[in-house]
Image 1 (cartoon, rainbow, N blue to C red):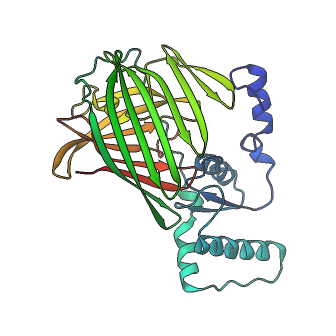
Image 2 (image 1 turned 90 degrees about the vertical axis):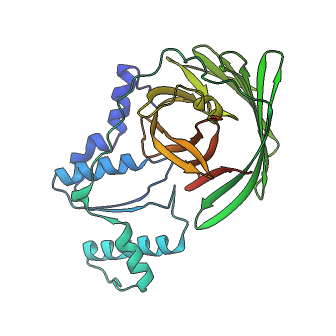
Image 3 (image 1 turned 135 degrees about the vertical axis):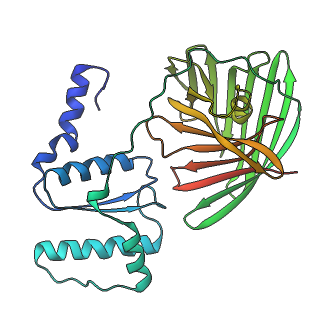
Amino acid sequence: MGDPSTPEGEAFLKKQSPLFSAQSIKSPLLIIQGANDPRVKKAESDQIVIALRDLGRQVEYICAPDEGHGFSKPVNNMAAFGRAEVFLGKILGARYQESMEPEVAQRLAEITVDPADVVLTPTLEIDAMTAWPAPTKDLSAGELRYKVSLEVQGQQITMDMHRTISKENGQWLVEDKISGPMGEQTDLMRYDAQSLRPLSRVASAGGQQIEYQYEPGKFSTTMFGKTQSKDIDGAYTSDGAGSDLILGRLPLKDGYKAGIYIARQDGNASLHSFSVTGTETVGGVLCFVCELAPVSDPQQKMTYFIDQEKRIAQKIIAPVPQLGATMTVEIQP
């Protein structure tokens, strides 16, 4: 691995990168990509396709919008293997079968991408807030219940979430407990009662526990007895329990936009664009439609439907790239 913040590290990474050696790729290339792959981002395959296309090389591209790191749906697998057989058969002068079942042929047509149409998704241009604005509304103690739906690999998994909001020693405590087929998960966040700045977090699932401590300009993660710190150059909040409550207390209005660092559960922090894109009625409640998108990967955006009066999310739609899934969280009466 190389450190991109140093000249030596950057040179090392460029030397190892296929993108910077694209001119050396002479053989025809078939690229198969899952759009939700959290390890090999779609943008990386897009870059190789564009580079080879512009060099006049033979390149073919398959990208399944409903897959992650490796194809899991049988029809996508059959389509990809069928195309690979034809690709290799023609190039090597070998025997191959071009016909396939109608549903597989249809799916192959749907996930085949014309290299001429591939363009890079531009990164978002936004500056991070240097200070978090004063909350427009205080939190309220109480209990809320949510339905959580996870759509993954053509299946839908339903879970229940119970949220408790309480105040203790000058801190707001927000605890989310999720129960369902995947077991139980607990996420406890502590926020400063005045500024709503995150103070600490304890996330528990599958018998494992991760602890977080938040300070101005940095946060730390403790897992398996090891602590790792991360510096953050700007205003930030956590993606833990109650994150919708904190975002909802920004000075929201039509056209509002801000750059926000999010301290993530994986121990990293990334700059996000947060914007109000309109209004919509959800469950009879008028909501701000807000989008939170990583600057480095705008396609992985989360959509919050924030109650304009109570400033809590009526609904949240979020990608789960690790599973190639989409999660929907909806408040229950």
